Length: 494
Image (tube, rainbow, N blue to C red):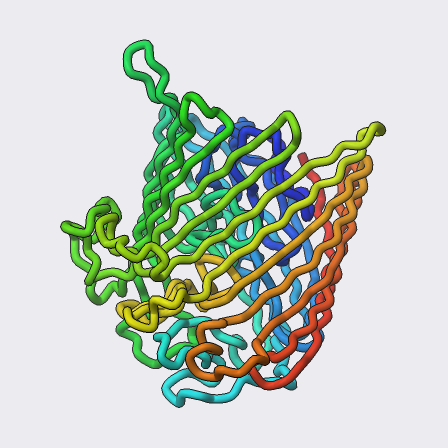
């Protein structure tokens, strides 16, 4: 088996069959690519390989230490929460195959120094924990802590662990893996790797051909998830609402006449388990509003598109999502509660075999003007589940958070075993709160510039990253800067 992580700022090759990329612990500018099933259209597992043949084998361990010098900052880093100060993480485990059953036990243990920032957010609501996210007045609530308590801590998470059964094209698994759904690189809207995976059951298929007699109708993939989300310790003191039920449906389709085009539909519902009923087990199949559980669940949905042009090394993609999804017949105002991501990648090859990869992505999660006459919460916030679209205090979707906007440009250069990446970003945090409560021109906007170096040896990967961030109005208070540093290694056992 070849199940090793390759640290990179890169995206999977545009000529690949894959719809997006696999990423696990990393920053907004960094992804860690993991061996996976390259026949997948639109639904990805973090640890998955068709090459597992042994009953037991060691997975490549990864060690990383990171540091923020002024305020917490981390993106797409799975269960690892990177506060101010030092963060140390260790990933490792085993995998194997026994008949049609494969398993991967790949947990993570990490230490967070979790220092107090010199710039603490104001206490705007006494009913919210002093560590909780305060900027939700008039928008709802969300379990998204600014700090995980008042001291350092060490945490264990099952990580990318899974027991899976495959029978032909049918796949089912019990897992704590986290998933990235759709083609977006940095900010997938419905499911991303911003937080740790939650315990869930997966029932679905591998991509399969659709045929009607001798007529080929394209390729399809379908997956249903059912699992449980958990509240963090820093939201409220009500133990009755600590858990929520999650139900998701993910569909991807490639038409026969455009083999490089992939279309997707994704839907996620969640509600607190104290209101759970047996019919909720299949709630996600209700697509039409006439039969859907619109007043019982908080819901999100998105449509995705990716179009690849392998001959010129180009890929364009988008995701258009709704936070207040009410069925197809309620889209009278299609801009209401919408969010979207658009992006592209371009590969450039030099005569000596070296390669450049350019990637730009724009994400908009802020509200449209329809909120002036039609109630609309901020993205990932709604009325039924007070914790919002989160698990253990981390977002399930885009890491920039509710009401935010983001632009990212990255350039990667690969030469033999060495990789150099440079990136720049602009993140406007929670514009919805600014518009509703502050109404002044000095937005909470962070500009970041960074780079990384990766060197791959025969049995070892070594990587280093640095990101300098300048926030022009952090917590709507004052201008501050943060320096993020990360150094890591991965031992290649296979």
